[in-house]
Image (cartoon, rainbow, N blue to C red; front, top):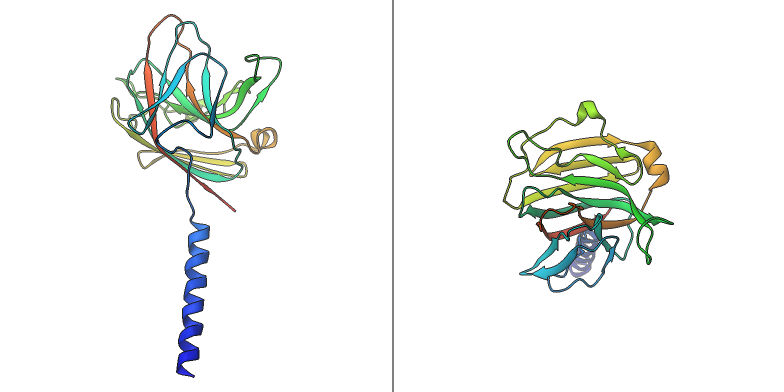
Length: 221
């Protein structure tokens, strides 16, 4: 009897651990070696891997460029680190994004969807972490809530956390909650889509560089 109880307890413990692990699985979106699982859409910016970092570099005259996941996601928590090697470059990460014709390049239509802003703080603060509708309406975070802040550490690696659950999108920069936005209309038009790393067009300036690392995603039930 004692042996049966031990076996039963062990099985229950294994089931509990298995359930916990399944509910807490993080997917690594970047293997730190190459760009497998990613595809560039729009623009002519350069993307490559260097020392476990996805690097992006502007090209003069190029429009906005995006390195996008091949897979699409709906409700999730996304974490990554980002560094602007040049404060003159602002960037962003697309979530729940798609493409549309006839705009964009020949292979893909124009990338569009919610974007989480990446911007150096500078002397006056930045809009890093606020939400922008790339090619789909402009700023999602209302103007009165887009208060410039200095949570983004210029010239350093910055930790971003994004939680998208239904129409609610929350963002953190270096542990500080920046935006907590409910946008029913954007959720209707963009309920799911790819993740995209943006290199913003800079006209004839630059070249400027940005890097991302430790890109992880957890799908939410």
